Image 1: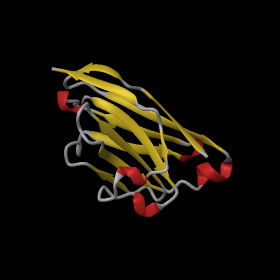
Image 2: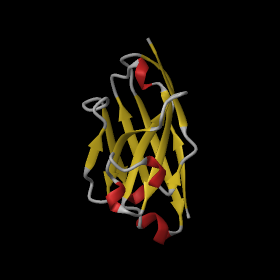
Image 3: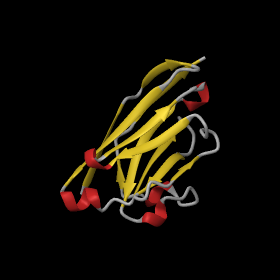
Length: 129
């Protein structure tokens, strides 16, 4: 099993920045067999949506709404996933979730979030205007 723990959420004014982190815990085999990690977000009454993905080769994808503002990165030595969020907007307000899976093909926004096997508990991001 892999356990994911997010941190770094909070409240910020529009135009501000936040950095989210997601630490992966588990036995060595499980954490190193992860081939895709991603950030999702969900606002009340809305469907969970993909924000960014990164695969084991470092290839990244971003939702159009965050391109140029958010950067996903991973520190393999520390089993940590990060999301640097700049120029935040009120519409970025949501619960942000870290997700991971061993299957590389899952790193595609066309793939439903329900396919991911591992999830964190979420961290709230609130952006005020």
